[in-house]
Image (cartoon, one colour):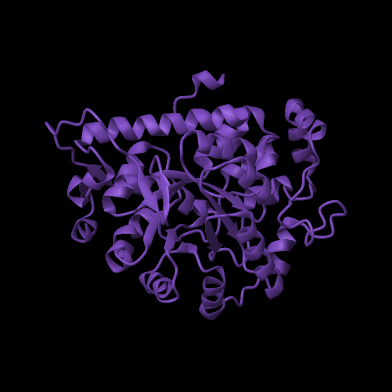
Length: 389
């Protein structure tokens, strides 16, 4: 199987599986506990049908959106994800370049493997910086100041990860950073020598956003211990309100799922919220963002930008979310598997296919612009959903 044979999410996933050692593939592919929520995230879109309109004269389609003050040429962006240079040696460099080619936003994680300064200097498309709330308040302030000085446009605080989810696939393979693999995990690495050659022949793996705080070389603090020892489960709304004031710009919360929390985000001055269950990697059994979207949009959609991620694999999924009222949609695994499969070329192909799907599906829906999409275009299989739509 080659890159040119990849035509959808499942194809990219299969190619990534062939190229990645088992522990790393399962780190991307897996979810928490029984992975029920991870499966539901995508299945939720299937309970909603699109209702197209015809004879609308849609020879030209405008799929651009403005979200949190950023103009995007397409209504999807590359969500910040951790450890990207484990998946491909180009990591965030490949993702940022591909996102720039398609005029959309990309994210850099606190656990990113390329510095936010390098990416900001080399790419002109909007950049969002995702970070976690630490027990060390000085560290939180320093991270925000660093992002501000680098020219990052959007600050994103993840609020659903005050501790790590129970990812049992990683426990079985022994996946951790630094690597502490089981025997079976080591065998998997041996079976994928090309990945290993790229890993050892390129620059040393590092976490430049956290170099001063996490000793990767000596293994003093693993990623697992980072979540359990450095992050602050006592984080509260007063803490976040102060951060919003200190940032004094576009600030969004990732992981908001309830109406009450969405309203609090408005009260403290957030300009956006991202409905997310972390791709099913945190609290298994939690509600899907798409199922919760209408309720949140109705409550606060006129006061801040409501975005969603988790489970998006198709252009039709994006159109359904936009029709309910999302301003944009975040992609995670959707671009990580192509990254693992083929680096920048893989991410470019995935974004090109998503753009083509959205354009084609908008024409089939009779929508010339994103503004033409509405809940009138949707029908839900379950009666209670129909009432909210």
